Image 1: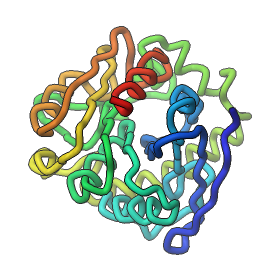
Image 2: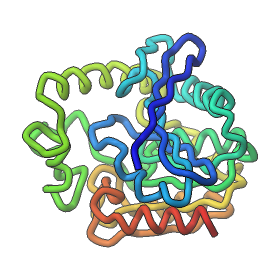
Image 3: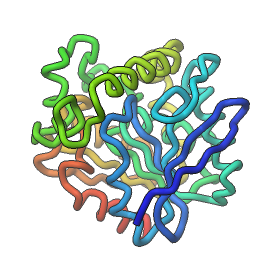
Image 4: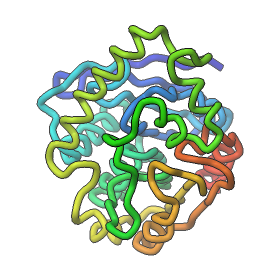
Length: 259
């Protein structure tokens, strides 16, 4: 089954969305970069119609320097759901996309069905801090993304799923600018996010690799405690890229969305 490419104009920004599968709609939000791609969604395509937008300034979407802060991204994604005519989709977010999905659900959770937060960023809990990305050298980054480093290396220069180096570099530079705009307001999180989580009405699955070095799996219980209808899935021997390291993670997410 091949991915389709859809394009939407959202407030003057050209937004590219990859879509695959047949069934109930799933909106899946990527993290702070797109280097790991979206092939994981094939694992849901036999049961769901999965929509994978590139955030403005990321991947194939156009740049949008006027979007600054997570509030802009929440409004952007709500407009995108309307433009795609998704009805009441399930909502899945990974890392920064998990933070994004959590804020969307806290504001308008009734707009969505079930919610999956996969190693979500945004909480910035002082007792369970995430990695200081600025202090991680390029050679060490793969070990922060996957417990099995060979999985992460597939997406870096020389890896089987990495584009030519000039394209890889251009993508990281472009996405770095877009990420900087999102983080201008509060950095990688919001000081009040923890207070907002109790507003999320959705049945929620918190997914975390137990060897995640980017965002600590010890945060999983905090998210689950603060979201009223939440449960956790801890993936053994997996890091931040749990869906890529262990495809059974994707199957479990699909089972949760179908239940």
